[in-house]
Length: 179
Image (cartoon, rainbow, N blue to C red; front, side, top):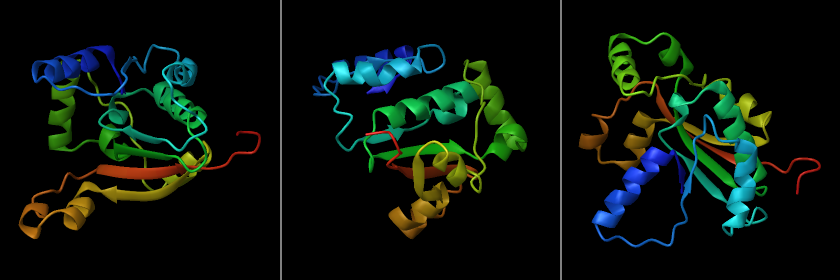
């Protein structure tokens, strides 16, 4: 479990309070300031096998990171992921980050006030080639509403619109000269 030190400390405190025991290994990491090229070695030191298939869940964070942190994180995931490994992440459409409507402006103001400005998003049409250039092949890219229709009963799925929120799943490709 890799997360920002403050966020991870809070989650671990909640788990401790609940008496939850987990075999998970925890790595406190600031994706904006810690050297991302060191992350694969850190994971290896904790027992991660970069030659084995890996599922990386990158949830609830991409919209808050800088372009440099996005690039560094994807490079790190590529370095610790064997071909065939999966990267699943949610994201916000780029146009809604840079040109938010009324609700988006309100959300942006709220999250900025707690130190988490909205900074990054992808254009869904450009995402496949962006990932391909970094060694990943897009397998699926769905809106939250599409996922809700597929996974939830109709009465509940109709209330999920979450315009601009998406979930993508990509697969690590075999890259010449890599593993």
